[in-house]
Length: 448
Ligand code: NAD
Image (cartoon, rainbow, N blue to C red; front, side, top):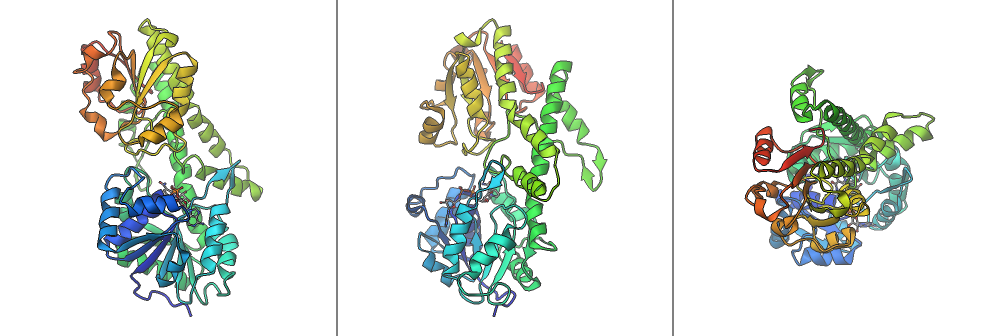
């Protein structure tokens, strides 16, 4: 019979993608014996050879030390699940036409059902619409003949980390726990407390925990959409949106300060572009029409086009038509400090610039060169200096920490005399912008 918390230190993570690898490496780093299981043999081979395909700060080192110490093993064999006390599901949950593609989740649960043994606790961490843990995961897991809540436990604990800060956030964000039953919730809470010493928030139900994740990403997407519209207004008023946001965020409201996020070239990645739709679809299926989600998605999806217009306008001001321009794009990942290219908003920007006749060079020190070539249809420059050679415009579209070392002023001679710097991430300080201008660059940022 399933009993809450058995002091377990053995875990299995199913789905060793971005999120699963981060969770598995972190648990192994805390002394948990972890087996990571994935259906992709190429990924497992890469991990075994100590090649981490995810460009997350600190993750390669953590994965390697886990593998070297033997605390972490990786395999394609689901049979290894039986050794674990806690089984974490971390497979992909994409959305197509606002509906969950549950293929990977169903396949994982079906395979897992054949291996489950009494006393195990299954924790779903993949993001899902409300009701999926109860209506899809639980019945599939019971297909192996064991009863949920009786023979094995089930909990939903959303993963709320964001790429670029994943290891830190995984260890510091409180973990929301929704259990099939109180024993399942207690076991999941005890597991996270014992392993990563997490602060726990017990939610009333699995559905409530499922909604926590969707509410978080709905809020982020909506907040960025507001920041993007604020930036558009500031731009026509000749007001610096960064100053407005910094000052606006000093106001206290409710339990803390106002927190307007930064405007940008767009919202990409594998979560914010899909998770709000899970909430929207769930609402519609229950006869409730949500207005804010489609609006925020539309505003954010329009930002790459806004950025193309901004670059075109700034180049025209410098006397250079887009069709004759050479543009160096620094940072092609979907956001700062990650090499992840999934749904990157930089792609529609580059496409738009090319459609306008511009020659575009790209450089991203964090992204995989072969991936960049596949997605952008051009080999990326080896260095920032190479990308910048002869550029009429430097567009910084993902602002990685590495770029702090590139001194555009020192490279002044290698770019066009009327070179324009476009800041797609509202990043540069007023002092840096002054310095650019003193050295003959023109500067334009989103909302600045
Ligand atoms: P991913 O595509 O990087 O990884 C998914 C992995 O699951 C792949 O390696 C795939 O081969 C594997 N997989 C698919 N079917 C499988 C099966 N039947 N058995 C075993 N493995 C299988 O996706 P991700 O970015 O890691 O996201 C995974 C989940 O985590 C999603 O629900 C996502 O919304 C959520 N999430 C992701 C992030 C993030 O920053 N990437 C953050 C929080 C939550």
